[in-house]
Image 1 (cartoon, rainbow, N blue to C red):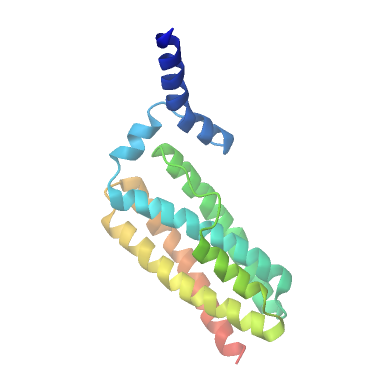
Image 2 (cartoon, rainbow, N blue to C red; image 1 turned 90 degrees about the vertical axis):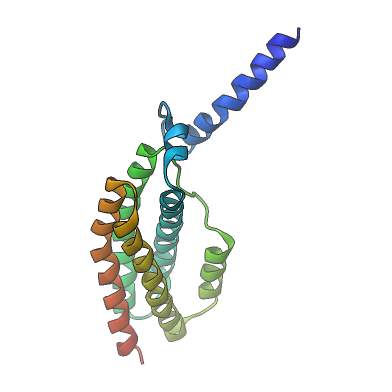
Length: 182
């Protein structure tokens, strides 16, 4: 009688990660957990951090595309949504190949930023959004630059290096808008 219960418990425990990945739209891949565990800690952290950052960029960009007063800020916001969505798709594929899953929810820090921004209106909203995009993109550029140089995985290096021009363009556009909104 004990054997079926143990087998059921083992079966349930080993299928949970695959079921979770599948329920998030990620088909389970054979050996995926082993791949993720084999990655260097820094590479796993980069993928997670980049996934969270990409999710945040899309969400805050969507908010700004709806709420911004300036047409230039709305254009930047929509560009951020479009381009970070494309980056997120590439990152999702990379994460799957590495046996990792990306965050599907914002952490408290990023949600608090959106909540704070949501309370602003008009020019105050536009300025706060642009300031956030400057700070946020500076941080992301540092993270992606480090991954492009130091990742142990060639495909992660390539992903990070290929994404840097987009991040730098967003930063430059936000900096130009900051001067324009003064």
